[in-house]
Each structure stands twice: as C-alpha cells, then as structure tokens.
Image (cartoon, rainbow, N blue to C red; front, side):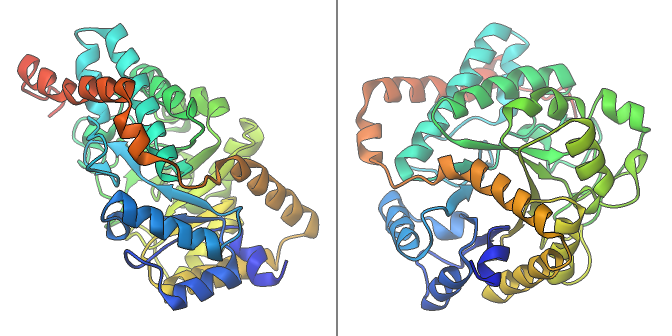
Length: 366
C-alpha cells in the first residue's frame, strides 16, 4: 500500500454530481478511500444511483464503503420511490400516548430503512441522532432528536438502531458529545455547550455511553463542551482518547463530522490533521470538490507521518475490521418495493405523522 492509499483509508469523501467524472475516477483509484458519502446532488433515481455505485465498484477497492444520511424527516437522501420516514420526534410524540407502540414502530422504521439501503447497495448510515432536544436551542437538531431526556433517546434511538442493524447496515451515532443544547448551528459557527463535566455526564453524554457497545461508529460534533476542555470535540484528545477510548473502552470507529463546516477554522489540510491527531479514525470531506478532497488527504498524510508504526497499524486494522462487513453490492430495489410485507410496513409508518398531527398539533418544547 502506497502513502496515498494508506492515508486514504482514513478518508470519506463526497462526489460532485450524478455520475463519476474522469478526474474523480483517477483520484479514487490513486487514493482508495475508506468511504464515499452520497448526497442529494448524487441521486436522481434508483437506476441512476445504482449505475453510479457500479462505476465506483469498478474503480475503487471492494473495501470501499458507501455512506449517506438517512435519518427520516428532513434529513434523508433516498426519497421517492422509497419511504418518506417520519422524523425521530414523531416517535417521541407517539410515545406520550402509546409508549410500547412508539418503540415498536421506531424499530420497524430502522428495519425498513435498512432494507432500502441494502436494496441500493449502501452499507453505512450516518444515524441515529443521539442528541437530546433542549428548549431554546438552535433548531438544527429539533425534530431530528429521539427525545428531550436521556432515557427517551436511549429507548427510542436504541429501538431504531436495533431495526437498522438487523438488516446488516452500519450505524454511525451522532453527534458526540451531544449537540442538542447548542445555541448555534455548527454548519455556520462554533457552538459552546456550558455545564460541568458531571452535568454533561449525567445528561448529554448518557445516550452515547449507554448505547456505546451497540454502535460500530460514532460521529463527533464540531462544538466546545466547556466542562470538557476548550477545543471542539473533533479536535479534543480529552474527549476522543481519554474519555471515549480509555475511560469508556470504546473499540469502534470515531468519525469526524464534515470538516468543511463553519464551526471549524483554518484550511482543510489543518482541520484534517488536527482531527486525526486528536483521535478520529476517519474524516469526512463532503463538498464533492477534488481540491478539497486532496487537501484533506494531505492533512491526514501529514499526521500519519508523525505517528508511530504500531499505532498506525492498530488504527488501520480497526478501520478495516469495522468497515469490511458493510461493503455491499447493489441489490434488487424493485423486488423490495413489490414485497407485500414491505408495502404494509411502509404504509403503517407513513401514516404516523398524520396521526400525530391530528392527536397533537402543537410542539410542547417551543
């Protein structure tokens, strides 16, 4: 493995459009990234998406994983003809009336989501959100949260997670150590979460800690938790190494949120360098621009050059072991849509949002 490929195994990159360009194909062949993350700009319909996936499989190692955000609600990349999933908050609203049914349907939603991803050949879902919805916070999380208490999030996100993983999809819990109380959108600026370490451990950190053993990957938040240091979590050795790895004993992957987001400062090369140095295994560069992907790669490569050989090998082995089961081939999406059990489950889920609107038209948290 050459130096570019070695650094590439720490990289998840975006693409520019609906089809792979020659320049992108050359970059991917040279770098062999650990993953490629897909956005709405890359998806027109299932046939086009599977054509793109096949072209990626021809140019990149079979060990390359395909990623996207398929939470439900306003954050989902696969849409028609697939399920329009209710937001996570819909399960919270339902649980106020029928807690057991809400848990069962959240699990069913995760299962159906996993079936659709397998049918397309996508092995990694950047979900579930494990942030706690807090009053007065920026709405960037809002209805994406599975609860306004740690217990709600653990129960409902845990059920959704169980359903997703039953279909062989890799979940990425986010946004560690908790974005729910942020009063700024980290896509735009750097949020600061106040509170002591004890306060954070009793609330914001609790869903991550309780679900940790079931999560093959965690995504960092670009925010400062003032009770846990002055660095954004993505750049914090205290959070990623001392707490997550040493105190909690986490053996899964630590993945940065998109490095281009406005919460972080400096050039992309420096952002990638600091994320890997702090303890991220993988870094996301989601712009779809080759120059940005190359700059991120350069930062990873520079950091790896400063790391001891044993640590490099251990990290590389962890990445390969975690990702290998989720490198899926394109599936049979039409066959899935024709299954009666799938159609019945889909109809049930799509009726929940309307049921909730009729039963509870207001949002108590605002």
